[in-house]
Image 1 (cartoon, rainbow over the protein chains, first blue to last red):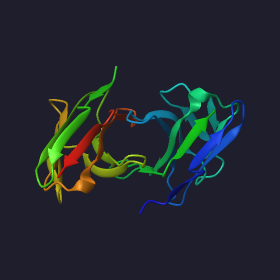
Image 2: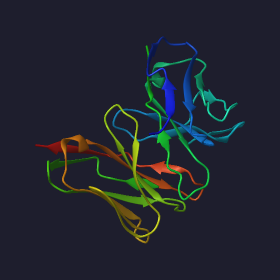
Image 3: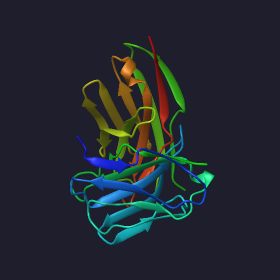
Length: 114
Length: 109
């Protein structure tokens, strides 16, 4: 069983608010990822990290920021939420090395911005 | 550009067999994944192929042909709980996962 946690699971907030979506994993994985996914649509990579103090932007342009101060923690912050940010946000992690890079996903945060 | 194609939706009958196809064009190839995603839930890993051929895991099998840029996921003895989206993803030359949009599989009694 993959041990990757996301909080909150559901969030409804007003436009302009600052929010932080939390993601933690207890598997000691170096790599962590944030995806955005709308219902019935593909996963879009918005940020990833190869380890502590490493953060990169993904393919999807995003107004969010991330930090990786500890291996197990990879929070995502929206400075000023807008209705266009309404979506599901999935956090994932994978190990470095080995035969392949299977990604383990957290349960997701479903964000609604009014 | 990088592209992964899979059918949007498929319907099958409980107890039957279904094959979900995936074709890809990516910059490099370091393996292909299949994930299952139930509605409103996170994806869960099903299989990984990096060499040509068939990998069997219980009721699920995955096939890869690198020369054709093609894979399929075969589900046997379908159960109602198999109703889900099935995502094909390719690990490119930079070891980044490129995701398909997924195939929604509907199982009818």
